[in-house]
Picture 1 (cartoon, rainbow, N blue to C red):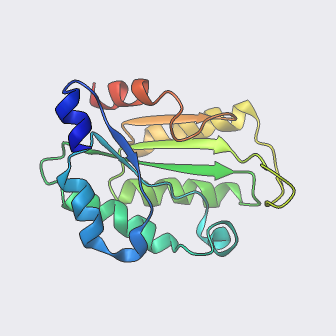
Picture 2 (picture 1 turned 30 degrees about the horizontal axis):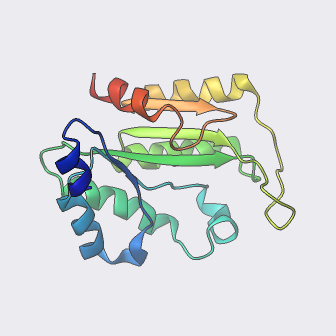
Length: 169
């Protein structure tokens, strides 16, 4: 991060990080390097976490996002998280994840359709419609996210440059 800023001062850096298994000094190292966006994807709803992210904990992911905010009291680093849908979650669970992310002061959220990469991976249980993605985007806006990217092909890096522009406008 520091080298990128050193060699290209106008370059905006987004980092996608793990939960560091709760080792907060590792998060502090990242925050001290001052990325423009710190991204940690929540990925799924709490009920499905043990299936979708067996080595992670929903609460720890939320805690990481909150700690990142606390480690940046000036608010110069935007926080971001992403959610995949189509793995068997209920609508109300998705909305609750959005509420949880806002309660932990996340700035940007991405919501995309889970697509099964291979037969070894979890199956798709539901394909969300464009109208459903549009509704999730509206809910996210109403909750106060600075930017919401929601659609079938959205991934955490989808239109990343535009995300930061809109979130900082």
